[in-house]
Image 1 (cartoon, rainbow, N blue to C red):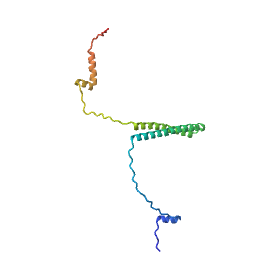
Image 2: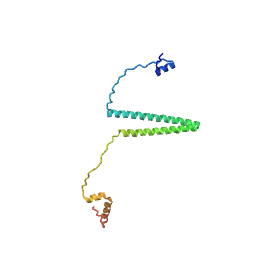
Image 3: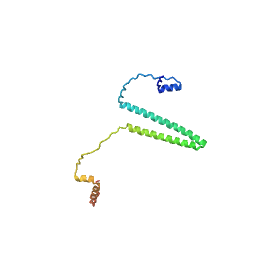
Image 4: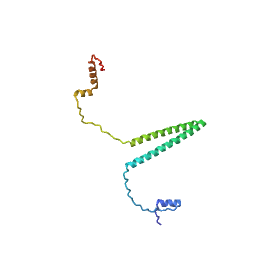
Length: 165
C-alpha cells in the first residue's frame, strides 16, 4: 500500500472538510501601454486653475463649517460650563485659524507657480569708462569729492546780489 503524497491544500481541504478547487490558468496577454503625449501649456494652465478653484472652494467650505461648529460648541460650553467643552472650542478655533493660514499659503503657492521666472544675467566682464581720471577718482572716492566741493565754496568771499529788473 503506497501512500500518495498530498499537497498542503489537499491536507487543509480534508481537515476542514471542504472541497478543494484547483485554479485554472487564465490566459493573459501583455499589452504595451502607449506613452503619454506631452500636455500642452494651455491644458496645464486650465487644469491648474481648476484644481486651484476646487481646493480654494474646499478650504472655504471647511472654514464655514468650522465657524458653525465653533458657534455650536461655544453655546454648549456656555450652557454646561464644562471645562472640556471650552477645550474643544479652543481646539476648533485653532483648527479654523490653521485653515485660514492654509488658504493664504495656497494663494502664495499659486502665485509662485504662475509667475514666470526671468533671470537677468548681470555679469560684466569688461567695462570701459569714458572720461577724465579726475572725474573717475571723484566717482570712486565720494568723500574726497565732497571735501573739494566745500573747499571751492569757501573760496567765494564776497558776493553781491544783482537784481535785474
